[in-house]
Image: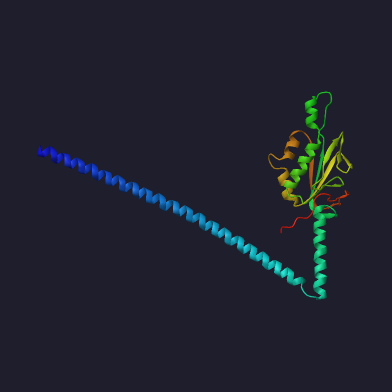
Length: 245
């Protein structure tokens, strides 16, 4: 009987000891998880702080630039006034070029596009349709040229503006000002010639899609292009300048 009691107490002690060991292990794991979580949160906090410091530094540098610019224009010195007028004229020229109301020049590409050769006897209607360069093809081409980095674009002699719209009129296209352009279409684009050409001829580009359809595309790099100003009358009837109060 004493032996049984001794074994029973040993069993109870073993179970209790095992429970303590397991409980201690769980507490250690919980502590490690908390420590790990705190480390992750701390890292995020440090990254957020560094990002905030960088934004503050950028704002401070921008304010310093603005202060220098303001100081250049302060006072009654005739030279400062002259410099102010020159800077304003320079900005107007830049804005005029970007908005399309002035002629611009620079390096770029001339992209010549025309329909594929069509065999009216052998080609099906579907094949003929695929070989024609449609208005939506032109719109997607212009969009891709913009993505390639073009800063100014014209189709033949028509300056392309943000509001430019085109529609098909048989073998020619009609712009939103009712002017027309016929095939072959010559697209002039000012920008980095090498980078734009590489982008346009890259795999899966829309130009490559046109070439697969048999559309004739020729791309020529030019050291200098001249793109004329728009002939459209640009007027803001509904929009006006918005200033944050």
